Structure formats: C-alpha cells, structure tokens
Length: 330
Image (cartoon, rainbow, N blue to C red; front, side, top):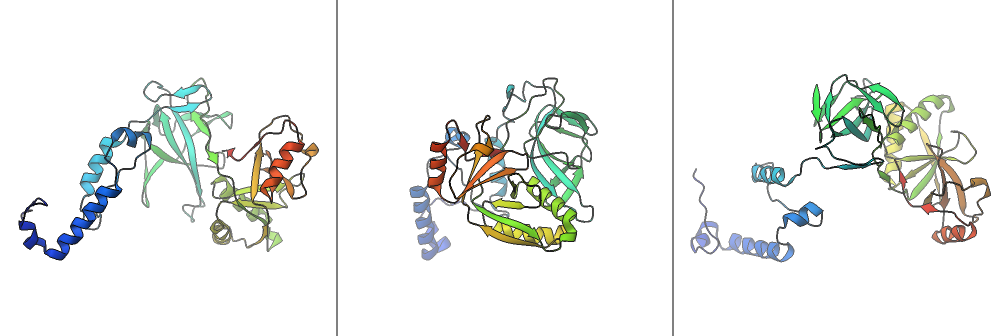
C-alpha cells in the first residue's frame, strides 16, 4: 500500500495511531532530544561523537538509509605510521600490508591457519612474492581469500583498505609487515593489553607434549592469551596471562577440542605485569620485592610479575635506570 507521511503536529496523528502510541512516541522523541547531541561530522571523524541509526534488519527498516550514510561518512584508506614515517596509500604505489589477526583451525578438517592482513598501500595480485619484514625474507602469499560470514572466496586482486586472509604455514605474527617496497619499512605494532589474571598450565597426559606445545603456541599467536615462561627455564613451566578469566575456559575448551589435550590450571596470585623497556637492564641483577617474579615472553623479552601495586614502585626505586611499561607491542 501507499506510505503516508504525517507531521508530528498534525491533529490527524491522534486517530491514526491512538493516544497510547502517540504518548509513547512523544516521550521517546523527547528522550532522544535530551540524550543525544547534534550531529557533527567533524566530531564523528575525530572519534569524539558516535552516530546512532535506528532500524531493523529483520523487517528491513532503515537498513538502506544506514548503509547510504555509512558510505558517505567513511574515509578512503588513511596513512599508517611506520619506522620510515607515515605511509600514504594515495602516494605509495608499492604493495604493503599489516597482519592484525591470526586464526588457527578455522576449518578443523584441514587444520588450517589463516593470517588476516589489511592492505595499507598498493595493489595485491594472487601469487605475488613479497618481503616479510620480521622474517627477513621473501614469501609467496598463497590462497588469498576474502570472507563474508561463513563464505570464503578466493581472490585474484585486492587494493588499499581491503582485508584479505592468507594461508599461514606458521611464519606470521600479529603486527608483521609485508611489502614490495625497496625501503622495507615496518608498520607500528599493535599494543598488547596487560593481562590481569595468571595461571600455571600443566597437561594431564605428559605423552601429549608435542600437541600441547603446538596448541598453546598457536592460540597465543592469535593474541587470545599471552604465554610466558619462568625466567631461566624452558617450555616445561608455562604461565598463561589473560585479560578476563573466561579466556581460561576458552583455552581449556580449544586445547581439548582442537588439539585433544587436557590441561590443569593452577591460579597464580599475580595481578600486575610490566615489560622492561630499559635495554641495558640485567635481569639477574634486578633487586625486587618478595612478591616479584621474573618471566619472559615468546620473543624472549624479560618481564616482571607483581602481586601488589606498591611493589612496582619499590622495585623502580631500588633499581636506578630501570624503565617499566604497562604495555608490550605485537
């Protein structure tokens, strides 16, 4: 039927929708006026204001309006900071991409591992050879694909701003840069949030050592958990750090389901972690507190764990020149 548009101040609205519906509508409009700010494109672009759209995908109401506005509000790909300064996709013709996510076992039947990367400049061609900056060698990117929901589509070409998933034989990490540029620049990494909960992890069946080490390393490389080792020991003592305790359950479930390994978690009392920023610090000679523990991460970087926040201040006071940071970088 024909859609009829009626202004809110038109008396006709009273009998069109009834008193009750009109009262609710007026209250909701009043709430919107009071709770929302005036739309300001500049503030939206700065990330200081969030636009809100009302609609329903189920009834297909407002969806097209949202998509139209969303397209007009999005920018073209922006420059990204690297160790050679900002790389502008509008000026840089050479291909470059940044790995921001890794997912193991997306297809359990194939035990595959996909590295997701954002193309930051240039053009991607299937089968091209690119330089892997962190791995310090040329690699051939295989099985490039784009994903929409559970659908996968192999692609031949992709451009700046696109996100592609590529087969990862275990060489990529979050924060890696791939490029065809002679400058071999590396993009800035992603800050890794400091875990607040720690547990020692042991496997129930010691015969499954290989699967255990593989599984826990792959899940850590995805960034879902962070794994550490006791300082001066090997992989036999593994400490897991997570931001939320639910991640411990996810770790247990995934190791059992994807790697057929059962684990025991022993909670540790530590709540604070600090990366050591000062390059000339000798970990053996740090004078700490009784509740401090020395550990190292997957990349052999030294870290300190504390139970109490005041211990961090005491440790800094006792060690001249020691610089600690709350964040690491992938």
